[in-house]
Image (cartoon, rainbow, N blue to C red; front, side, top):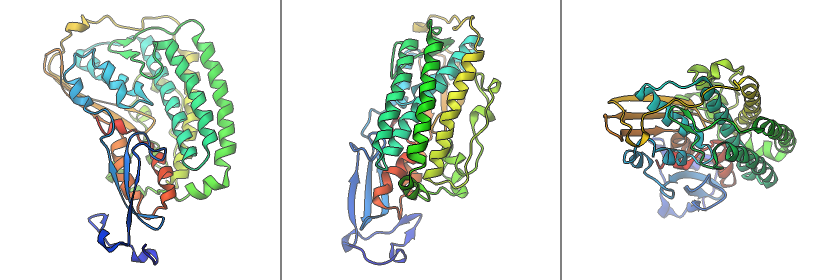
Length: 389
């Protein structure tokens, strides 16, 4: 194995270490694709010296792929069974963006009640996504109990989605023209009860995770994203906010009814794994409060869907559009081109996971202890299907 201080690490050329694997000073270790130390099905090829990483290469291709081409071979309404699979933990952002793009191209107006219901589902989905993330973040540092807590509480939100849409994971609730249905009787009271449970959960997580000296020792200083890296690597969402950037599409380019809600963009300064966790944890509190604002002010009556043409023979005039939204991981966008037929001409999906899981992770992993790679990767909050789209 390699011996010596860090000054003897391989030279860097074009941003990557120059490694002579034949020298037998380094060995390769695989982490993933079926491994708790990665976020879903993705493989990390690690070159290590002792227990320190000198190079990391990301390998994708282990998931269902080709979403964009599949969408171009489906009618517009059939696409809703596909877009929600582009990010399983947070499908509703994809549903909203696909619907919003088709509405813009088809000149479809959305009823007021539908705007509130869409915002409600997006914040519920955002909270569910964060609950899955924080379980993985804690588990990657050996605190699996928090993962048991957070996934159990995420299930309470999935129960509500099942009431609302009939589906726990893939909802297909947001469709062109609005949503598929109004909230069922008693839904708001059950949602309030779940929010109270999550309030207690967040208090417990704060005590067990953020006041844990082991978590602090391992997460503080891990994976620092400098301000110079933000635009270079296309960093958005909590990863950018942790570096002090107050960027949030819900504020910068308000959509749905976010301009009617009272909230601030949460930022940090140290830009390490610990700060990113703190920012996301604060955003979990924020989503709970936003949901409370929505259900307190949402109109009780009103149309939740605009009448559409026959969706089985729906044709949209030629055009193109780009729509954006703020997902739990960062900025998310859909580019759609139509040619007057019953099918999209071209669809391109851009999520934050590509830069986070590939270029950014490969950069931050160098000189990191192999035991902290899982914690580093989860701190970037990636969703591999976004990459394999």
